[in-house]
Image (cartoon, rainbow, N blue to C red; front, side):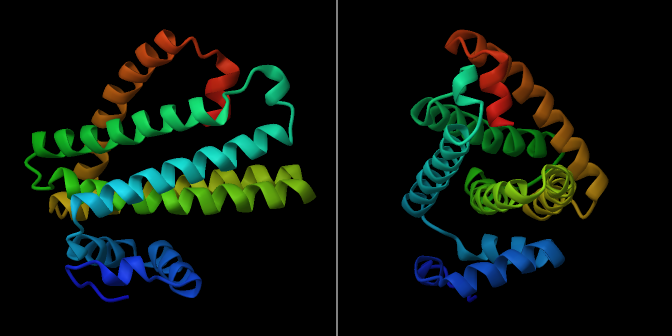
Amino acid sequence: MASGPDGRTARHMTVAGFLSLAWQTLVAPREVARMLLGLQLSREALLTGFGLVVVLNALIVGLMQMGGELAAMGGLMPVSMGLLLAVMLAGTIGALTWAGRSFGGRARLEDVAVLLIWLQGLRAVAQVGVALVGAVSGGLAVLLVLAALLVGLWILVCFVDEAHGFGSPLKALLVLILATAVLVAALMMIVSLMGVGPNGMASYV
């Protein structure tokens, strides 16, 4: 995948190219982070990508709710889920940018955005995989979720480190912890205002 500033490669990525880049993200997250940052995508492209991953993740969660017991237990509707996902993703982008700069990082809002948008795209694929595995074995699905969480955390640490130019995974982890603390406090307030119950929150997580 080329890293041209016009973003043409991103717009014309094939399924094979997507899967190849997804695998690269797992085995060489820093290289992928540098490539994504090098694209220098416009704000219009970032907003389009933001909207696409939010809608995709909301639809996947909504379909999973319809096929299970969560819908009957008061899970979030796709529209509400989409709004919550959008707020959380935007908040995460802002929090990681702010927290990183507090530690001397250099990332712009756009830099963090392109990395998290890509991670959300991978998250959608992971959710589909978990759903398919869960249809065969619930225990195996749980293991897959745990593995995805650990790998996702490591990728995020690498992405934050590359975006802010720390050269220190430990500092990137501290940034992630600070951003998470801020987001949890903000999320609790938002959830309270939206009147979302524990079941709704569980459907997101």
